[in-house]
Image (tube, rainbow, N blue to C red; front, side, top):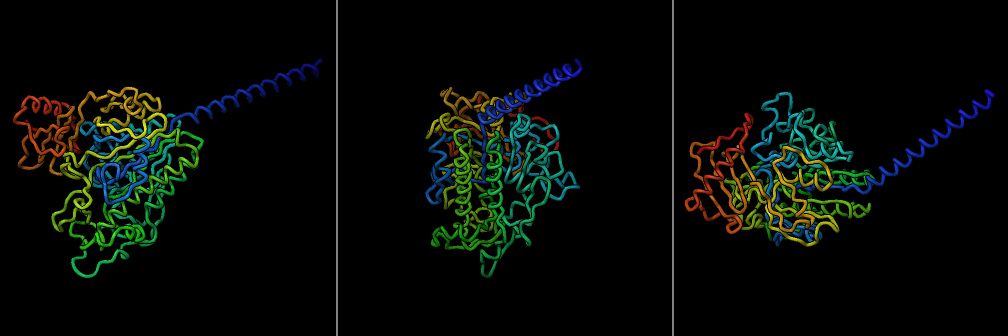
Amino acid sequence: MRKQSATIQFLCLAATVAFAMFTLEIACCQTSTANAKRLNVVFILADDLGRQDIGCYGQQKIPTPNIDRLASEGMRFTRHYSGAPVCAPSRCVLMTGKHLGHAEIRGNLQAKTKFPEFTEGQYPLTASALTIANRFQEAGYATGAFGKWGLGPVGSTGAPDKKGFQEFFGYNCQAVAHSYYPSFLWHNNDKFPLNTKAIPGHAKRPEGKITAEEWIGESYAPYRMIEEAEKFIAANKSNPFFLYLPFIEPHVAMHPPKASYEKFPSEWDQREYRGGNGYLPHPRPRAAYAAMVHDLDTYVGRVLQALDTYKLTDNTLVIFTSDNGATHNGAHEAPFHIGGADMDFFQSTGNLRGYKGSVYEGGIRVPMIAKLPNIIEAGAVTDCATYFADWFPTLCEAVEFSPPIDSDGESFWSKLTNKDSNWRRKSPMIWIFPEYGGQVAIQDADWKLVRVGLTTKKPSAWELYHVSDDPSEERDDSALRPDIVQRLAGLLREANSDNSIFPVVIPD
């Protein structure tokens, strides 16, 4: 009797275990199926790329076939704006969805100025700052960033691993990224050796011969970063992922590999760049700049190829944009801009006013393309005004996450997917920028109000532009429409929260 009872108990236990294993197998299959259907996101961010530096926006000299392919297969925006006119605050707006009036990081302040324990990196995001990557990680996505960070040193509250990225490979510090041949890159919290002898990002050669070879090291950092990004895609081909690619091209210094710049005509360069406007000299500065933009395009091609290889293309949203406009002009070695870039030769900003560091259109209006097969219309072009603060709620809607309740942006997913072809933003776009003399701007519909020199002894008057008709910002309508000036200035003041690290006072 006891033997029979034990047998029955054993059979019951075996049945229970078998049922549990069967249930677990179903759950795993369901999870696998769910993961396979969840949308991947690849966000590609260029560094100081002018709006007209790529073919689909009008570039005539530099071939960019892969970015142009993105535009032909996706939607191209003609009025997309960065979060700020320089690197770190623009990335802060992108990552947190808060405009410069509310963003924690509003300038390119080095961390060591406030935190002497750090030798590199920018002022960090706080522990409480929520990023897009945090939201993806919380939802079970694999998250990776490969490129330039700039929102907090390794070991700080703003380090990539504290802000949602399971894997980071690249430059933590923007200043180190001035060299394309550093001694190391960061792989998560560890230094990854790269060059036995680092090549500096700054030097001058007022006289004598200039050769490109003396500024070329053993291992070119961008090539290593794109290789690691390809590995990330391969490793996560069966899992949903968020891949952030803040590449460093075409930010100066210019020292691309010889094979890259020799693709471009020697007759372009009748004059050497000797380092008078900062960064490194180069014997062929125009060819070097073109090489950096073209190399950037090849990285985009490699990402698209990896998605094709692993049959991820149809389920991956790919976004391409730039952190701000083309590099600003220099005062000491004309006609070159900072670092020897010749923006006039390439017509990098087209007819837009201003460059990097400016809240005029040339400093903040950037290229933007989004592609998702069968969802985003191929070859579409829109003039809807959007900016970096919009990406957090837009991506949340795309992947069906709850959007952050304190975001300053608006989701334009319905515009991307053509569910609402008449979509137009309801709230104004805000820039409150303490650097480069102190500048503010607000754009509401077609009107844009600007004021500069706020941290100088002679702040400018308010300037008002109707940017849809006057993208060059040549006609100041402030005297004709004082009502609009008053309304928009009031909105700017309301949007300017206290920030003791990056203060800006907006006068009457």
